[in-house]
Amino acid sequence: MSDSTLHTSSDRLPLKAALPFWLSLFMIPLVLSAALVGGIWVVVPIIAAWGVFATLDAALGLDANNLDPQTKDSALYWHRMITLIWPPLQFLMIFGLIWYIPRVDHLNPLEIYLVTVGMGVLSGSVGIVYAHELMHQRNRLERWLGDILMCMALYGHFRSEHLLVHHRHVGTPRDPVTARYNESFWRFYPRVLKGCLLSSFRAERDMLARKTLPWWHASNPFWRYWGLQAAFLLLAFGLGGWLGVLIFVLQALSAIFQLEVVNYVEHYGLTRKYLGDGKYEHVKPRHSWNASHKASNWFLINLQRHSDHHYKPDRRFPLLQTYEEDEAPQLPYGYPVMTFFALFPRKWRAMMNPRVTAWRERYYPEIDDWSDYNKARHGL
Image 1 (cartoon, rainbow, N blue to C red):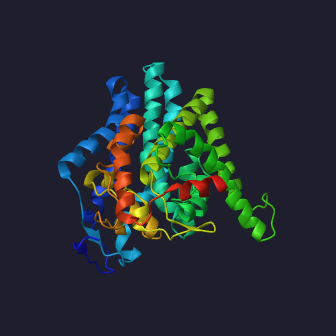
Image 2 (image 1 turned 45 degrees about the horizontal axis):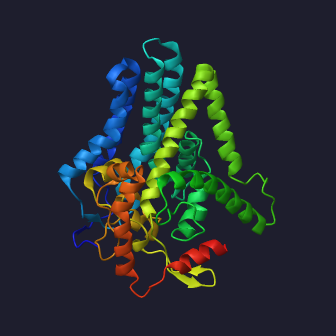
Image 3 (image 1 turned 135 degrees about the horizontal axis):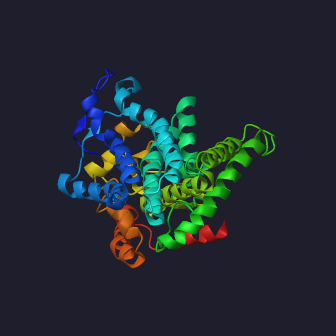
């Protein structure tokens, strides 16, 4: 871990310390302008979310500074506030535009589609990232806000999958979200869509079964997911008719796509050591790709410090630590660039397969044959 750890007290950190993470708020006027003006503005939110932050990463470089991980929640007021105010803002943006778009005539079908994709960038690259932060918290309000954000993307089951499956089984065949070595994103994507839904439902069903309760018991959070998603679809229909429903579904699909391409990048080719008898080593920073790129970590509230997130999943985003190469594998670029390359399998493999090979040699020099992992996968 970096020697430049910054120590803080339990006193509230000043607003200026959190302001870089508030950059996501600029997505709201950009998406709004796209809908109000049309024309070239319809692509601005898409370019801003990924192209601008990729450029800023190149200009600003890496950030190796770490806050003291013992900093108390009371000191993180301004950091937490952005995740608390975002859900109502996103709700107003999405459903406000669903009401607005069917009532105007200055947007042609292509412009409506691109505005909708921009809405999905807002609900995916910001909303789902914030939902991820909220769902890891213990208090009911933040978990509810996380569920609301995920259900606006029609992906409510993600919380069950993420907490009960992904964090427990990351880097093993039991985790559908861990991208396999040599697996292209286009093979990963349909597999993860099906695998996450099934594994999340089974995890909740099995938890209820251990309490001798049936899966349809009222405490199953799937009732909440289904209820919220149905309510949002009905609201979209009430505000915009069938076009409103189509806009809502398309923005959700755009958000889901962004989530899963990020998931593909985060663990590609990394596996926990198989110990036999169905057991694996404990999760360590080495089992997730780390990225310390400054600007994209502002935009994604330190999601790229993913090595520490899996090592210490209860840490709030400002306290996530970054690591050096000897502790965690490093991505060559931030997520905006890496997710772009992930769409091109040949380029992706040329870039990442040598890094996976180097990772194996660095962290597991004693393993000559990695086929045990594949045998375990096929044996499940």
